[in-house]
Length: 368
Image (tube, rainbow, N blue to C red; front, side, top):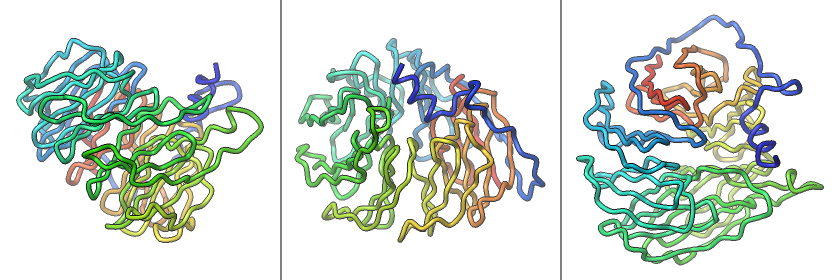
């Protein structure tokens, strides 16, 4: 019940006490249109996000489907049945396509769709495994991170983190920079591990848990950190703070009170975040000062934001795509998908954005 309560707080579930805001009318000053649509299969209880590699998209579904699509047209190149219940993905580089399973397996495929290896880990894999420096880094629901050999799947290292009594059911991946794997953790922490060895380089507390009960004390960094420039990484904790940290030392550069379970969006001069109640904020990337606030999407299960060419784009629990002006937060355009929720932030693909819905629709949206 506690997990359900947290899920509703994050996603904006409709109930007698929490009513999603009605869509507001506005005069469009831009255009958002679907340029292609594909289908991969339902996400069910999980959240999947497409992976972009060159001109190719890889998408996955809970039933075990792994699909390669042309990023420009949506045309299907191949479809593989992994014969597993997938729970996390997709991660991809030039050589590997990676997904995780509910039974604690990391599955690796080649760009041709042929299986390379499968490696057991300690529990359910909720975030997309990712590869760098010859190592695949995977995270599991029991708070562990694993470093697997990218060629064979052999376990090179394992790192255990401490978990609080209650936590969000997160789908975080890791972010790579300077031979480090950066991971947001439960309890408002940000961790840097050496990719090759799993040795901690630093760990920083972004936010301290507060409150009178375990629900109020949930302070998890529930999404992958975001790199800002060459020397900083930024992340946000649920019921905590948003902060930026020096990559080299792990020292806080700035921080301010904030709450989000989604990934930060990054623009040229601003960071964007979606609060649990659906309010979208723009923050100065150098200080964290609020630049604007869009509060007309309350309780609509709003996704994390993505920045694209002067716009900020979010999606909601009914599959609507909302385009905001990056300078003011005003509505610019809106379009519909298949009516089901979009659980993850849109993915920028050239001049378009790609979203994957809970019902398994994959939509490319052109914005101008």
